[in-house]
Image 1 (cartoon, rainbow, N blue to C red):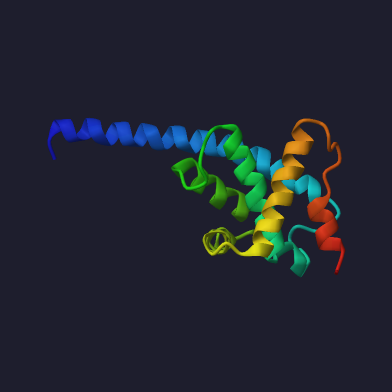
Image 2 (cartoon, one colour; image 1 turned 180 degrees about the horizontal axis):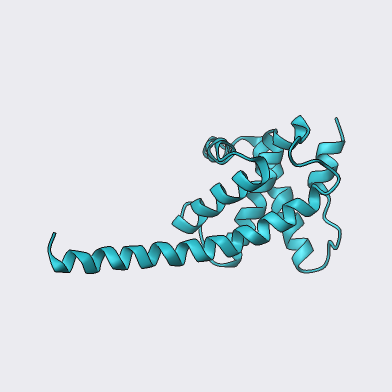
Length: 144
């Protein structure tokens, strides 16, 4: 490895650190918002509806809206880091992030309904038109 290749590696490492910092900030906001919706539940033992397609879409919608606010795409390095961080924090496993990405790619209608609700909830909360977000709470509580 030549000396110049070290500069390339350092630049990539710096880009990754910056991406991690941005992802960490977005992830913290998403986690706090999502935990607000889950206050009535034991997050170590969530009801089944908290991890169904709609709920996974809801979480993705929150993340997507926050990324959009930073002009970032979900498939960017920051977006992928945020997805993994948030799904792992909320559900205890990054496998839900992989499942969500699969549902997103397959254009699952239920997933996208949840995604729309998640995006609307965080945007409404942010602009104070929805001071008490509860779409996810209501979805989990109501058994249709």
